[in-house]
Length: 543
Image (cartoon, rainbow, N blue to C red; front, side, top):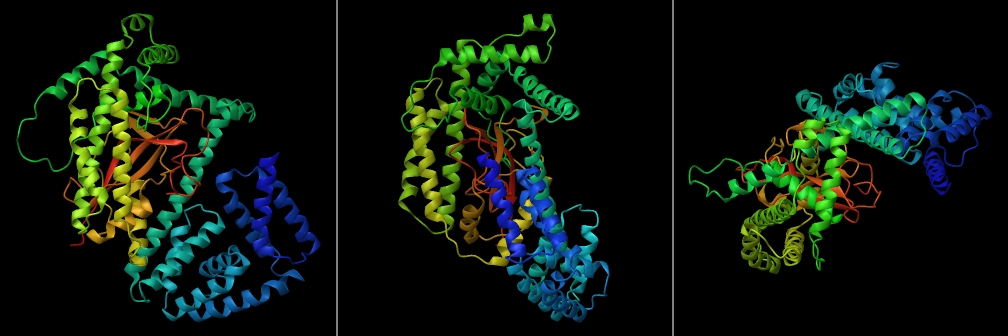
């Protein structure tokens, strides 16, 4: 009940920004009451967009009904004059988009929108409006989302000082903004899907047909997870250990780092689930390895049952022994140490490139030797190892904080944001993947601090699929993807933006991000960065 009241309050507050304290005609008041009645049924991820779009449509439907028409007359008539000065034909698609956008803005923003269109008329930006109309025809977005895109297109064109003769640049602005709009829409859709699946898992009755469809989807998603778990056998763990001991033959320097082996990624993931908390701890208790053996045995038995493994295969399939668990634990600690060795090296490089020498740099440098020792050990004191990893994490975070600045060009930031979103949208996610595409925005060394400030540990909500050990599957309810900005690139670029796999702490139910918006800050209270990469996007140098 409290949650419903809170949502009803948000709905009322949103509608107030469109209607202020105006007295509505009776028919319009009835429609408003209907919106308030039905809006609580809208999923959270779409609540704001749906309520704003319904408010806009209600105003447009009653735009010529007295006395409401007098309320809208000043803005509507002003926009009509400005649109005509731009060359917009009355009742054309461009005209409809402009007026839809006007009414989809809260009342306080409408004068600003008209001023934006007035400036666009002076710059002869009618082609930008026409191109936006064409791009939105097949986008399937809500009216408020379409309005947001048009506003952003006109702002981008004016910030870049475009005029009517620069249509190729207008094409780029439109393409980028529509891509961002679709990405945000996909993120909201994914959030609805996840919440629906969670409801099905909790036994919420959504009707027979929907229940059947959702149950089938949940089973299908679980099948891939359990199959992937059974692929990790004791033999694979042992073979990986033997291969790791083989000295690397000197040769040509690799153009990019190799992907993380599935055994290493699995070891980190399983240790997090066995611990039911982070690997990095300031004062950790000893690991209960005997309990881990029992937990993993139970998990594999469940996996065999849920995948309907034939009896003959069940007899042949081995559980992980205590020695196998020891090997997996050490593998996870070593893999995590290897991550921080690389991260410290990246950050020290970035400090040198920026000409900075903060105290945290020396602390990071001092940690390299014990981390190298941990990475090579066959068996470590897990309490000391986890405390060391915790110290390394804090040291790198402090160095990253020391190097951040906020001075940057606003237009460059917008361009980078668009290109990053496009690159993320097109990049397949694979557990352990250490390579990926290029973000089509060149940056200087001095740009790294604001990128780290804006994008480090940010939630990537629209991608819910990942390939694990060769098996494509959807993310589990307690898994998410988040960004990680590196200090340098091992592939010859200025630096990288990685995508890491995150895991929700046991017993927690909150979302991975602080909001459903794309690239919102990660919820680090309830979610743990596994430090396992799923893609690495490269930022090219501008120098």
